Amino acid sequence: MISFEQMASILDSLPDPAFVFSRSGKYIAVYGGRDSNYYHDGRVLVGLNIADVIKADKTVWFLEQIELALEYGVLLIKEYELSSRDVKGLPEEGPEQPIWFEGRIQALDFLVDGEAVVLWVASNISERHKMEIKLRELSDTDQLTGLFNRRKLEHDMMLQFETFERHAVPTSVIVFDLDNLKKVNDTLGHCAGDAALIAVSNMCRSQLRKTDIAYRLGGDEFVISLPHTELEHAVHFSDRLRECFNRELNRISTDGIAPTVSVGVASTVPADRSYEDTLKG
Image (cartoon, rainbow, N blue to C red; front, side, top):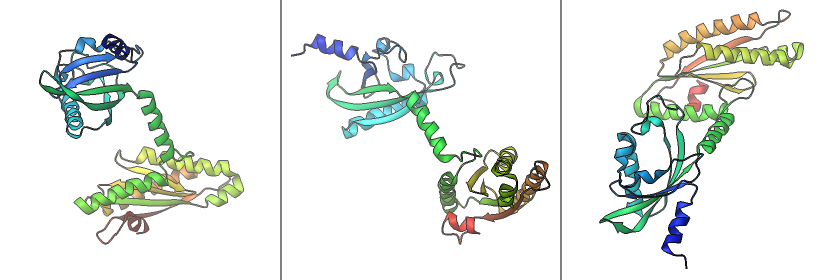
């Protein structure tokens, strides 16, 4: 049989910190966190309240999670971030990158000083989080041009269409393709065709507003989504963009052979039943 002292020693040896919080957010006990690469000694927190350590908006979030764990009595798993700006007493100019944690919160079946309590185990998952973001970016990005791909377009357009249906927020799209790209590939080689695609992609990045997003559907087809943009403004922008495209493509032409750009513009209208209708328009 493991004694109370042995159990306390085991808990204190955990690599990740384990907190016992009361319903009101008091640090009842702190165990573990022995991995000095990630954690400081948390035992100095015992007796303090979360609000003494963490700034107001984050404190509210922590208390909400504690209440949920107590209300439902099941293991609650939450990912969250903490930065130097969230912790009281630290300089505002601390590291910009937040630390990401996975919190496992479980209600305990006893009271401390008359209050219900939870066990909160916090694991540093910052490296995993970075990898997940990187993988997500790769899955949403066209490898040649660095623009978003068809998968990302479908996701974004679906959200924009839902916003239009609910709030009548205008959304326009510019659809364009490179004419004569096959001729360029056949005559000058695929490197020349790739150069044309990259030139157009770079021009998109330089000309678009922060809210506009460019996508490569594949081959010579591209789409630019223009949220909060009426058709008239989208048409004016597309005319200017087409001139920029053709000027840049003529600049990189070889032996007088260069693709040109054909452009179409559409806006979501009440008759549309999906974002696909907008793209077809």
